[in-house]
Length: 486
Image (tube, rainbow, N blue to C red; front, side):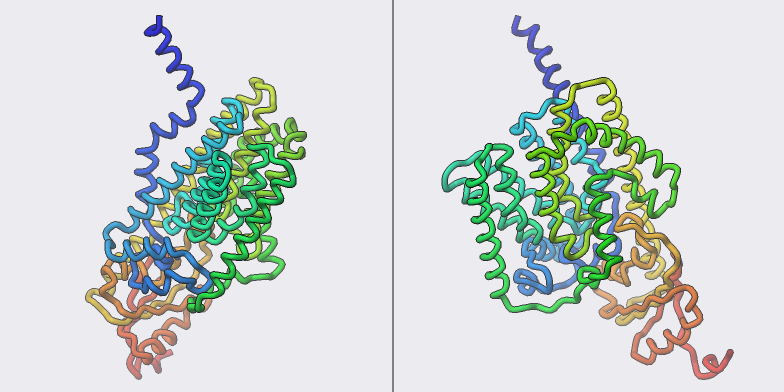
């Protein structure tokens, strides 16, 4: 009798956890696809790239960053250049899978139903809001900051007494040292614990006060270090109304509206953008309307408050596709609670299936454009090496900025994919050139190229390259007679 029942029990488990098994079975294929993505843009210039850099300077606050784990990874990859970017992809994808399993455990503790559980983990695994992290190369910090924040939450829920405090505080500090936004979970975790442990308001506020003290301690320690200068990204200090509106729209879109932003912003394929929006948002609109009592009840509003707290550091600086990653688990908890409290009707199942399938197509579209950007970088860097012909110590490049519609790190402008010469330096294992400087000019100023090249040669640069669209051309040094020609 036991032998007859065992296959049935196994089938039941498989049917109840179909999303998790689907993820596990497709892991090799998905990971292979991720490893095909090549670095572009600032993947070459962040801590986790293999260019020569000082480890000691980066272990302490460096400019606006204090990310010692990125510094350690950068030191490792600097001495194992051949592992870049495979090692980056391996760390990021592994971390994302672990985060998915941690979220699975949290949903189980929350006692959501099977449908909500399966939807929640699939949504977190492939939603547009996570793709800016999962498909990137310099996002180890974002991935593991969330990982340790989730582990800290689990410690808080499962442990008692002093071990609850030790586990939560230690993990959240580690998360903060991966990326600064991890510090928000000193407040988020005590608030979320009320959902899992049904704490009183007094208990929650007491632990929030402990979290605030931990934040102040971190600030005091950080400010005690000497300040190392590093070039500051001007996007992080833009305070214009237009810039802030862009941040707010990015936050709302990536957090609440799983759309194909590549089709909308880059391709301008409005037909597919509208169709995919209808297919995905029909489900979210349905559960939002039917579950409005849950969404705007005590638990729903608490989760939305936590979303705002998690987004606050990015809204204060800049909100990009990568920054939605830390918000996604909170949205998953909200959607899962709403789904659990709705009757399981055929319409709900149909809309959910269509929405998940459409999101998988959106994820594939984002992957494809990221892959094309990487190929663009490879083509341009190989052309540059061919144009140079031999090792050169100093190079100056002139980038012609065309009308290419860029979108985050998925669709990167050719001159940005080239990464200002850094892609060439990677191909030479940073042996040459020692110096590479550049300037970007719009297409309408292309006539200035000879004049700029002359200035570069006078400044002592040995070679000048013109980067236009996806073409690299050497700009020859002119003699006095050439300069007099109209």
